[in-house]
Image (tube, rainbow, N blue to C red):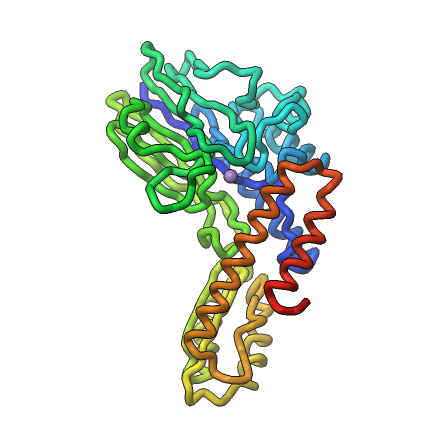
Length: 373
Ligand SMILES: [Mn+2]
C-alpha cells in the first residue's frame, strides 16, 4: 500500500521578532507563522495524508509563553482527524521542564504524539504498515547524530526516520550541530529521512534512502528562503519517493542588490517587486557618475505603501560606495549574525528568568560592533 504523509519542520512559533520593529509588523508575521501551521494541517486533510511529521523546532523555545501554547493547542485540536508527530529540535529540545516533556501541549488532544521519552522508537503505525524511527534531541548542540541509534526492524513496508540536525557535507562547521554522516545514511536502509534544522529545502538520494529538509514553513528573515513550504511525500510499494512542495508562507522576505546609474532604475526595481506581503531589503551601490541621491529617499518613500516594509536604512550614502566598503559591511553583518546566534544558544540553555540579561548583552554588543558605543 503506498504511503502519503506531510513532512514539516522549523515553525519556530513564539520567535522573538522584535528586531523587525513595529508591533503591527510583528503581529502580522506571528499570524503568518500560525497561518503556515494551519495551511499544513489543511493540506493534510485535503490531500488525505496518513499523518504529519514536525521534525523539530515547532516552538522557538522549550519554554514558550502560555498564549503561544494555547494557540497551538487550539489549532491542533481543530484538525482532530490529522495525526501529528512532533519531534523536539534544537530550540525546543527535550528537558524535564520543557514544553515537550509533560502534557501541557497534548492534554485532551488525542491526535498529537510528542516523540519524547514516553514514546518508544520505532513507533509502529499498523494501519499504514509503517515504522517511525527517532531520537529526541536533549540539548541544543551535540556531536552525535540523532539517527546513530536507529536500526531498521524488519517486518514493515515503510521505514521512515525523523531527525533534527545538519547533514555533514564537509567544511560546513557542523561538528556540534547533530551532524548526520552521509555514509551512515547510505547504509541505513530507511526509505525516507525527514529532517529539520536547515531552513532551506534540500533533497538528497543516498543509497536507497531519500533524505530531505522540508525548509522553514514561514520565513523569519532575509537568510531564509523567500517562500516557506512543507513536503507532501508519497512512497510507493517499490520504495519510490515522490515529493510535492506546498507553499505555506504569506510573508515574503526579499533582498535585492543593484548598482544604480539612474533613479529610473530604482523606480522600475520597486515596481517589479511590489507586493503587500513583502518585506524588502534593498542594498544599493551607485555608479561613480550618479548624482541624484536626494531623489532616492523620495522614490523609496513613495513605494512604501506597496510593501509590508522596505528596509533601506543604509542604502543611500552621501558618496558612492566603493567595493571594499561593501565587503566590510557584509563582514560586519556576518559578525552580527554569529554574535546573535551564539547569544540565542546561550539563552536557550539558561533559565528563563535570566532572559533579560541576554537582551541587554545583545543591545550593547550590537552597539559595539556598529561602532556606536
Ligand atoms: Mn534547529
